[in-house]
Length: 394
Image (cartoon, rainbow, N blue to C red; front, top):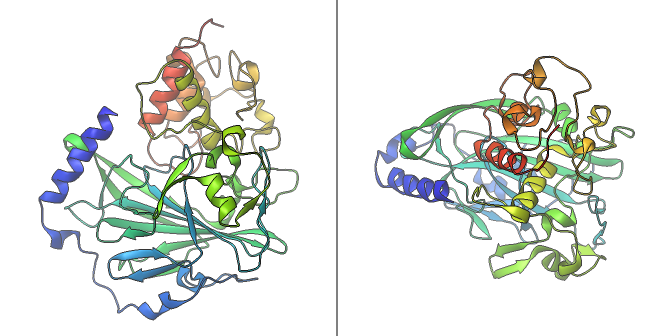
């Protein structure tokens, strides 16, 4: 919380000084703004050349506005992606049946569903490639639109439910910040992340290619099918600041015809809400750490995921013990262990492989393997505090 306050102060200072012209995107060819006039659409096949063709957003002046019928949502605890903020949306075609409830798995969405995730950073008063660290997950979004004068858009990923299953389609925002392009082969965006006190970090932000999308979104290696990860009861069971007021997301989805079935929110699975706070203890610390590990690791580290052969199972229902990593030696030794013996050593995060791999930036050691070029300092600190609070030893 102290860091969040400091970062807010730094952001205000950055916004109050500097040269606005330096933050202006590089000049580019004229943009076809009429391309944003499309209504929301389901493309049954192929890969439209632009995000604009899906009609999920409109651009009105300095605002990226959600189209009619497009619903924003957030996860109680989010996946770390080089400190990028994320605007998530879901849209179902007119006449489609609501998504079907599942207690633990992703909701069963109808054919025609379009899910988007837009990655962005707050701008600074410096260069176009200098962005600010912000821990508020809803920064610059008012429940209906994103303030384009205050953010640098990086990419938008589409997950679309077609007859044959889900397809992942990535788009990159051009420097004009008013147009996009299909990026099936991925992309790299070099950024400088500015923090409080003048500290900076170089980011080699990676937009995944379609195969890398599958590395995370194929949550059952036996069938190889891509699936959404976030739209599950435990991730959505929390309040969201909609444009017309705050409401529990599960209740809102049911009222909007997006979801059917399941218990009321107070009886439904729920992960902890965590946005970087570190002054936690007891059950709050346990809940936040398990929620963080769930969203960042469990799509691979489950009994069906790509990392199932590791014997490390990190879903919320998995009990504390060797399966969670407690006193568990690695299946394969090597540089990925950091010369540490066990995944988790109760009471000693510095002796635990878990935190070593979270901190590492080496390709043969870092976890997660994709989606970051820097360590998530708050996430590492959270998991370290959780391990240090564990009783016992190995």
